[in-house]
Image (cartoon, rainbow, N blue to C red; front, side, top):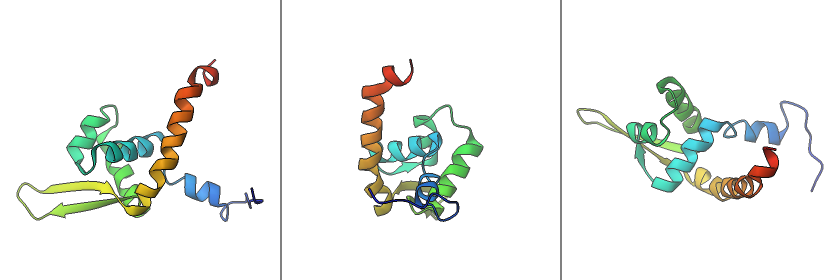
Length: 111
């Protein structure tokens, strides 16, 4: 492994992980991967303990970071759908490995 510059703001670890490493972002990304394109209310149902404010803010940040795309339809009532971008899809195998590790090691980590 090559040596990393861990000094903020040039540290790739800090800057990349901060984009998706919080619990709400991970849950949203995993929901979109598992279920494909989802509407706002469907994401909210998939993650019932997330507040409306947190969901809205997290979706905006993930879109800004190019991990998900938002498609709005000019309909009444308005319809908005979210899905993973190519960048978001490329991240999911790595997140999947982290989830597998967590499942295997949960008891040891939570002792």
